[in-house]
Amino acid sequence: MWARPRLSSLFGLTCGLLWLYPVPTISCPNYQTALSQVKSMLEMDWLQSFMDKQGLEASNLTLESCKMFDYVPTVEALQNLSQAAFLWNVSRSLHPVERRLEVFKDSDIRRFVLSIQGLDNNICCLLRKLPTGHTDCSPSGSTGTLPSKKDLTFPQKLEVCGAIQWYQSFGKVVKKVLETWDASPGQRNRNGRSLLHVLLRHRRESRAD
Image (cartoon, rainbow, N blue to C red; front, side, top):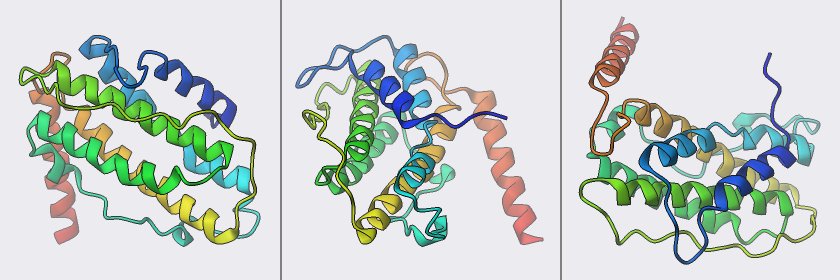
């Protein structure tokens, strides 16, 4: 059974991925490296770590109590976009989460915001590597130094919990789309995409039955 990563290890991985991207300019790795980093960052379990740290499970708070603050698009809706449009929409969708959470002074939340910024910077790199060459994408700003931990009120814990839950639900959809992409910019893995279509169609048919 896999052990869940601790917040300290999550922070270490975040910093390791962020060092390549100083603000306001970013130095992009090659396409394959940036794509691999995006997938790795989307696998981080920030929600469980936050709930454990804040004692939310001890207060009998279930994930259903953490209301996601926005709608999560489906895999089918996103995979029909061009690669450039997909990456652009992912980047734009991350910004409201970042703005919602950057007001909090809690150090664990700041680490999560840093992770969002690192993910956004990697997505910006992928955009620049596409044949269309989106040079107008801008990297995320810096949250500055990490403050000491500050206690959150219960409503604030619910707000943060909902934002992180949306982020991770959205991240799962994004990762599934990225898994249909080829290792070269501007190309898709046709076999993977066809398989995804088959699975989605089978799911719809099962629901209809």
